[in-house]
Amino acid sequence: MSPARVLLATRNQGKVRELQVLLADLGIQVESLDEHPEVGELREDGDTFEANALQKAEIASAASGLPCVADDSGLEVDALDGRPGVLSARYAETVQARNAKLLDELADVPPERRTARFRCVMAYVHGSEEPIVVSGACEGRIARQPRGDNGFGYDPVFLLDDGRTMAMLSAEDKNAISHRGRAARKLVAALRDR
Image (cartoon, rainbow, N blue to C red; front, side):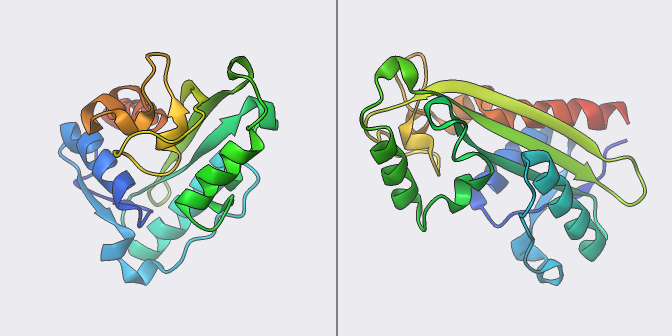
């Protein structure tokens, strides 16, 4: 049985909007950390996406008393040995600086070696229940320059097979193929089975 309310352990409003849509099928009201100051700042000091997602979900659920969903996600670039990976959000100070750093590091890398993926691990934690941990990935390449005005983070430089960047997609199209959308659909299926 799925809960009526879930705390999403983020202040990223882009993630909140995406998850609200994806969890709407279950009739779950999604709340963010902005609505729960009692939770405080969450650490992301794990070595893996899974460790970070579980850590954030456990802390937020314990502080709020609500079931909690947390994700850790990032960009893995093959030519950079998987970087920025778990450090995606801390790769540089701002979104623009992160994208610029990534493009600079790949300046001499030919298109066929610019393969990458967005990866997302989502954890659901509630009290003594067994945690649910799911993951999703979206394969693509790193573009030569940013394009598109939608999305957030690395979306403007993540090139899909059809020639569009993730930032050129509508929210609905992005949710259908994104790493977070794929992980969320697995989470929804697992919550339905509970």
